[in-house]
Image 1 (cartoon, rainbow, N blue to C red):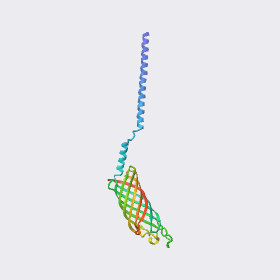
Image 2: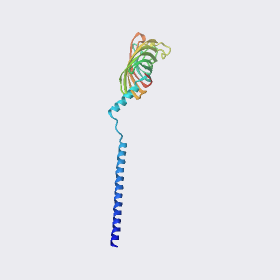
Image 3: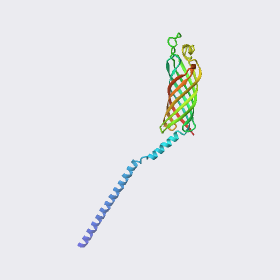
Image 4: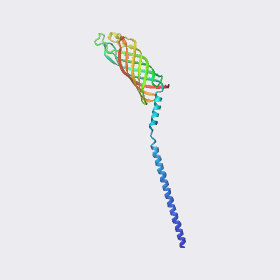
Amino acid sequence: MCDVRKSALRWVMMGLAAGLAAGALATAHAQIGASTTIQRNKKEAHPRRETNASREARIQRTIDETYSHRWELFGGGGYLRFRSGQYTKKNNEVSWAAAANYYLNPKLAIVGDARGSFGYAHAITNNIYGVYNPQINEYNFMGGASYRFYRKEKIALSAQALGGIGWGIFSGGAKGLTGTTIGLWPDGIKPAFSIGVSGDYNLFPNLAVRITPTYVGTTFGGKTQNNVGFNMGVLYRFGKQ
């Protein structure tokens, strides 16, 4: 009888030991699984950083896409400092500007340019007609070339040289008088030329903001007017070379 009791007790102890061992194994298994899950989540939360090589390749793809467009259209406005007569002071003018560039390759383009400026001239003081600040207008229609000498992902620089005609209207605000009566240039169409350097900030490969400090030479009245100013506006690119 005693042996039976000992045998039963032995079996009970063995069962308890087996249960404890199984519980310990299950707990260890769960801890290992949880640790693996945490490590995997950490890796997912911290994706692999972009390498220098892949970054440079991405930037080069953007540069190629940006400057492979065939056409650029520009529209905007600006400011011009203009001399309205041989003996008058220079006056400030508000301008509009539009241009179309046709690219032969990523750097060289053929340019068509149109712009107009409006302001109030400083007529000869103490003139007998009492007209001192008549409104004047000039329009320039030019063509030429543009060369892009610097191009990056976000910034581009280009230089333009243009030539064409300037149309001056100096009698429109002279109250029935001609512009020459109050010391302004005579109305008419004369040769004009311009040089400038454009800076582009690319918002997207096909869209940029452009600013162009510019020199505009006009020849009204048989004299050369050296006028400076700037234009700024939006540049849209399209088509493929």
